[in-house]
Image (cartoon, rainbow, N blue to C red; front, side, top):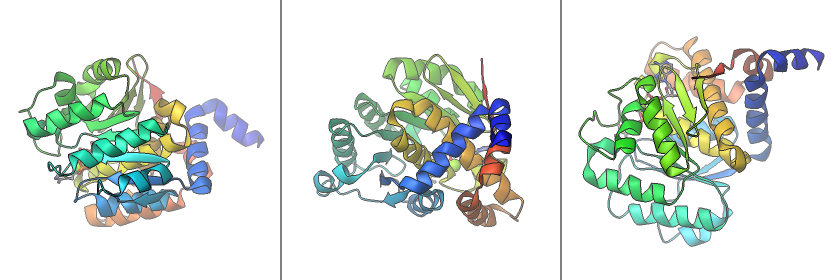
Length: 279
Ligand SMILES: Nc1ncnc2c1ncn2[C@@H]1O[C@H](COP(=O)(O)OP(=O)(O)O)[C@@H](O)[C@H]1O
Ligand SMILES: Cc1ncsc1CCOP(=O)(O)O
Ligand SMILES: [Mg+2]
């Protein structure tokens, strides 16, 4: 324990991140995911490996019965159609009414006016956290489409920090940008998370999966979404770093990332979580 106290002194974020991960394993919150068709498998496996319980329930007919049983809701617009949007809004509405957190992933928001309008309407329903890549956060902040490469980013995450701060201030949400450095802001504070490996970009839906992990961490600590989000980025990135040591390419990284997330231990988290203030 003395050693742990020493580690806390060196790296308070390591200790926080371990608290989130170990609580997730103990509490196993139920996370409802209304997500794109590409991401369902990786997202569900990420949540299970980390210790949460995923459920891909997206019919509007099931939301009144099911959403009240969940601890958080994840909404991802990656393959949005007009019939899914009312279900997303209904689930966000139930979550709000019952005081549960919900998290928005504006995947490929710059792809069309339909998707942008949908995301802006969803933000009106007050997600706790919005997590996108650099291009997605810039599109949302400027409420503009066109500068897009679909689900991938045209921007470095650092290019989007000012946009993220502005979006956080205007929406009241925590805004999170993924990339080579992940950033988290409440509009005033900004932290940078330097865990992860570049090949994670070559696994489709790795961004979607980390947003679901954010929802799971926020479920444990809804009043502290800023810290929960930074910790989730770090834990996911750390699983990628460890997985990369065994991987030969994106497909085996996908497998080893999930295995590494499942096996992450306290000592590794305390030593390797890399979160710092950013100004
Ligand atoms: N260059 C990089 N170095 C380290 N980690 C990265 C890098 N690019 C992306 N990641 C990580 O990969 C995951 C997905 O991020 P990203 O590719 O930005 O999302 P999206 O798929 O939504 O575009 C995040 O956990 C992020 O931290
Ligand atoms: C390829 C693709 N097309 C629509 S959603 C999607 C998945 C994108 O996932 P991520 O943004 O997490 O890589
Ligand atoms: Mg991606």
